[in-house]
Every structure is written in C-alpha cells, then in structure tokens.
Amino acid sequence: MRNNFGIKILVTIICICGAAALPLSLPRLENGDALGEIKTILSSRFEPSETGENSEDDAWQLILVNADNPLPDGFHSELTELSDGHRIDKRVYPHLQKMFDDARQKGIRPAISSSYRTAEQQQAELDQKTEEYIRQGYSREKALETAKKWAAVPGTSEHQTGLAVDITTADASAQAADVVWKWLEKNSYKYGFIKRYPENKTDITGISNEPWHFRYVGPKAAKEIKKRGICLEEYLETPRKK
Ligand SMILES: [Zn+2]
Image (cartoon, rainbow, N blue to C red; front, top):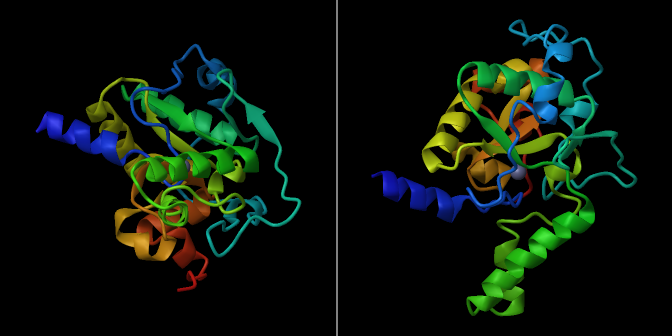
C-alpha cells in the first residue's frame, strides 16, 4: 500500500504548473531559512483571520488567471525573494510565513517546490513537457496539445502572478507530503490561501487535481470558498469557456 501510494504520487506530481517531482528537487526550507528567520518579527502581526475580515482592497488578490484569462499586458508585482531563490508577492509573504510557522508548530514540515515564474520559465516548463511527449512517440503537434494539459501556456499560469506556491514537504517521503497537503487543505483558508485545483472541479478549472498548488486570495474569499466548497472561477462567477 505504501509503495503503491508512493509510486502514484511520483507519477502524478508533474502538474500544470510544473511542480517539481518529489522528492528529488525539494528545497530544504527549514526554520533556519528565510521562511523561518523572520518568524518572531511577523508572528505577532499576522494572526490567522478566523473571522474572515479583510480590510484591504482585494482586487489584486482576486486576479483570475487561467486559459481563458491571461495576465494583463504589463502585469507587474513586487516580489520577496527567499534564501533559496523562491520568489512570491511581497504582500503574500507574511501570510505564507505565518502558515508555515503554524504548520511547523504542529510538527508538519512544509516546503516550497515552486513559486513565482517568469514567462520565460513557464515557456521552459511547457517546452520540457512537450519534449517528453515527443520522446514517447507523439508528433510535435500532438505532443504540444497534450503538454498543455499539464503545463500552462505563458501568460496563463498563476505562478506568473506571484500569488501561487506549490507546497510539498521537507521530508523525503510521499506520506509526509500527504500529511502536509491534508493540513493545508484544512487550515490554509485561515491564512488566505485556497487549494486552487480540487479534484472535483477539474471541469471548471481545466486543470488536473493538484493537492500541492495553493493560491493566495485573501482571508475573506478563502473562507467563503472553503465553506461553500467552490473553486475560484465559481467564486468570481467567471465560468470557463467551453
Ligand atoms: Zn502550481
């Protein structure tokens, strides 16, 4: 059972956002790294919002990016760079920090496997996936068509917003990743994050089930999305074109 699960995870971990395969390329974000160092500074200022209150202008955190809704021209966000080179929107960083701190307090060891990507990096993800299918015998056209189900075309990946992170585990086992994902699925809304691509919403999101991909939408939207069991497209009442 354990082995089967591990194999399943390894086979399915390559995602639309291009999450790195477990456990080969996990950055080791421990308490001594960037996401741990500022814990004492931030923990008193950013408590999880059980009430769902959100006083900020929330337009930026509700941007919808998918195959039908590419990033607007000239999109720009200010990023915070972590010690291992991962980058995220600087407004999201303290919330991610707090979520990681609280997970660690529960003995859970999350780690980021992918974060902000440039358009060039996203193109590289798509190219890499296309080449994999060509090596499997697909024509270039068919390979690209298939690869797009797993790697978004540049301009249509949430990773280019700086608001999305792929989270796995600092422990090198598939079981540990599952523990992290279950904790995040249950608790991430308190910090303003949602599991962006749930298994039962793939027909709406257009993206496979990705238990590792979390998107910051702010605590108010995250709480409602969690409570209603909906996805971001449904929350924004913006259905995908068929
Ligand atoms: Zn992702």
